[in-house]
Image (cartoon, rainbow, N blue to C red; front, side, top):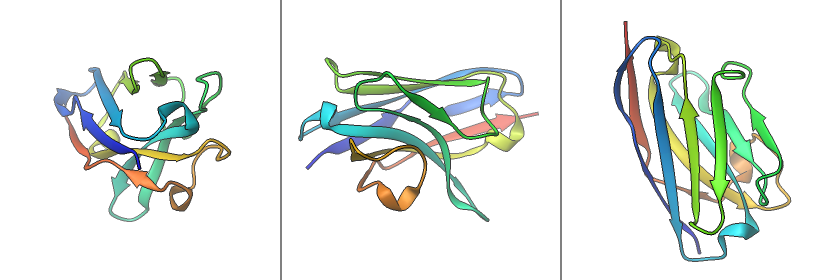
Length: 124
């Protein structure tokens, strides 16, 4: 069973950048698709970005396309989310999640393993 631990959240001004990281332990990291979700009071877990098991395919939610970049390093059991041009709508708790490698992109119910979350706050 894989365990996920996020880091890198914090307070940033509008237009700024943050990089979130998620390190995994247990299980075989390269067997999983990885994704970042953020908690939205109305939408529940909103899909932010996902990456295939081999790192070759990346997927993004419409609201972050062109601003966020997801990447993974299977040798380090790590997935990162580089967030640029942040705005107040990006505020929330960000979760790293893992799903079987056959899962593609962004349905939260398909992800079996979740980290504890890291808070991102964007101030104007």
